[in-house]
Image 1 (tube, rainbow, N blue to C red):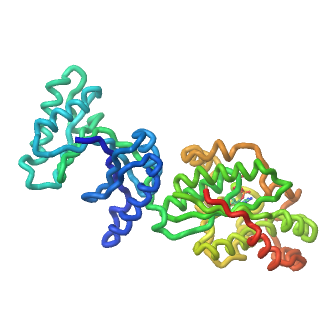
Image 2 (cartoon, helix red, strand yellow; image 1 turned 90 degrees about the horizontal axis):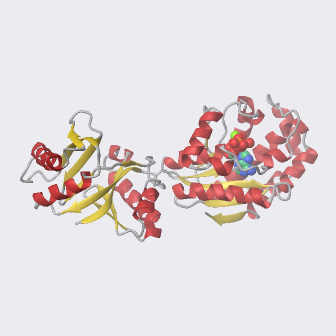
Image 3 (cartoon, protein in one colour; image 1 turned 135 degrees about the vertical axis):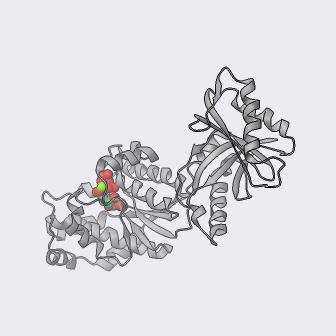
Length: 382
Ligand code: ATP
Ligand code: MG
């Protein structure tokens, strides 16, 4: 008999012939996530098991953050032939539980000497007889479910901890996240990574206008994301020269938009280099001047790659709730400046004229500026 974690997967069950591929990817991610706990991870009988970890609680918390995992149950695994022993363990498990319960048996071994209703009844009676003062049976709406799975061994568990869901990272390709120090972009990255996409991130840093702490804050956000994303390669791109050039040579009302067009172009270059197929931003319609429909059109059209904006229809309050849930809100709220806020025009164009943008951009040596920024980017593995 031993204690282990039984890891249940979510949407992968919808897969047909591809399921083994997704399962293999999920096992790899669970192994990676539990490495620090020296856990033993294996796939057996369409379930993933984790055992022998150094810190069971911390290890479970970690597994709950692995995309593709639906839920995690701390379980007991034992030989299935000694039914009396199963009853004894079931009783121990329910001894400290109060309220209503039912036993829910599942038999994948159809040759087992009892069918599921019989197992339910026998274990239910055994548990109830010994705990009548604090437990009663309710088969319709029980507060607790004692699950008994009869596979090649017997598995018992009564607690199910929900996990993040989604798909295993890497099964959905790769994309480049434009990561600022704000609230939105980490949430946007999380949402796309949750669909199985491996992230790389790109951050624009305007030293000395933006401080070393501002960069550290973004890297901290990247580290939080990286836990979910199984590692994230991050490009910190020096952006001061480009911003200064724009500031000097372009019409003031258009500086933010032109700067954002540069961000998109550089991110696409980096994405291409890294084999990423899409860009991700935290934009949402109408949130700021550069996110009106017209403004988004002007920043969108400088790249060929699809741009994913998962927050496009979200209210700020909803994004904040999401950020709190995934644990990025606190760091995002720290008061450091972003390059977007350094040279903000007084009256940014909300209905930009393309002619004006192009006139401004003509004065810049676009190719050289972009090449230099990409080449001088600092690459950090988070
Ligand atoms: P918030 O709106 O919460 O301040 P934000 O990250 O959404 O944060 P915005 O100014 O709204 O910031 O920028 C829109 C999007 O542009 C961001 O979601 C992000 O994808 C990208 N972005 C902005 N600034 C940077 C930056 N310094 N580096 C990389 N991407 C950036
Ligand atoms: Mg924003």
